[in-house]
Length: 220
Image (cartoon, rainbow, N blue to C red; front, side, top):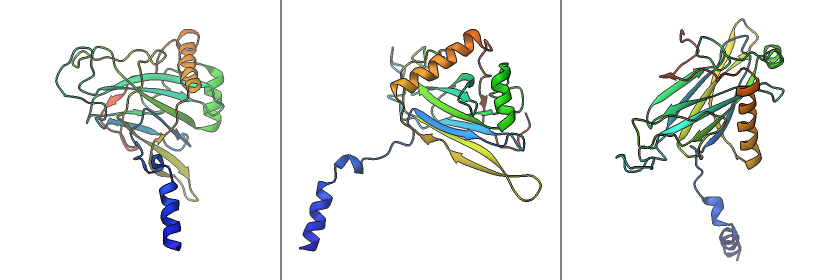
């Protein structure tokens, strides 16, 4: 009787709970901390989840290229920067967060936002994978991050973090970005905040991504 009861309970569980979790979803979130101790790094690649036949097909993203749109927020929820990176399947690209000429915060000139970041030495980083323009490949490009195309799968990303210790220096860790739920309201906020920044704020996007991966020991 006991085994039959357990079997009945298992059958009653919705099948959706056993569905495979997509780890390369379009919307992923992470953070960078203690930027006063060491810089943070964002590394991104493309799993190829959106690839099709891998031959040119008019008006179809057959190669599975994605645009990785980065939206960087100060801890007080004010947008600091936004930009895009074209990432083809199996390629590797990266951004430093605050060091070097290609860092995500390089073009930020909003003094209030900078003050918040400088006071806390931390940011929230949100990545959104969308379809590129110029399909088929070879002419692909990314629209501005305030007006992206539809979301696509294929994004895999990692971020590094610095942590203080009881000895000089910092402990460094790296974690994968967290797949997150994207609501209509959040998508609107990301794009509207970015549009406001590009039209009335700094007027420029954060620098484009670098080709290849970075770690905290990389010179820029």
